[in-house]
Length: 264
Image (cartoon, rainbow, N blue to C red):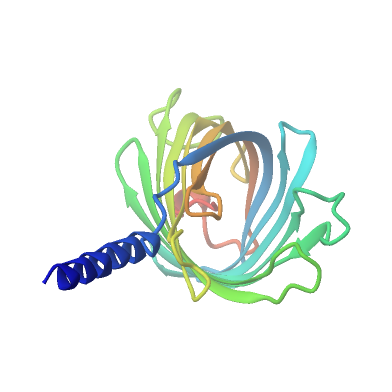
């Protein structure tokens, strides 16, 4: 009987040891890094008639203040005005990314991406302020910086809520100084997306000025909190943004005050 008891005890001890050895490791602590940068943007919207327009965005993005190159970002699209307060845009995006470690001989210093994108903008006009809802989707073919890395398809879904408040005039017209603010959420999906579905959240506040009926300038501060790739690594970014907007009607039957949707 004692022999049987010893054998049973040994089997239990071995089973317990095996169970603990196969248990998953304890989760690591969250790592949060901080960076800063400067983003310069030029936004265009050129109306050919009352329904169709060309839309373009051209960005230069620097990191480590203004010291290092981060991205060149080119977005092209065709906009169709569905109603007075709703338009739809679709097109192509060609961003170029600079590697964070260009001295590594195994990486490409500049890596392109290829994207299709679609966007709907809904204006919610009030008497003295403007509110806009922007829903944007993107299909991204992107790759790692390592040389000869394959392109992988991922999807991104973005929602941005934007608010404009005039300061020196009751409505938006020439020489209007205004507050500009927004918050935008980024969600991504795809076979390679495992734990970083919530990709980024960006909050912006700044000042804008209508130089004329065709030109507008905005500048301000953007805070970004995003996933950095690994399950435990996140990044806080402090970014100064300066943007110039150019709007133009290429026909004579439409006035800017009749068009409540901005060109962002």
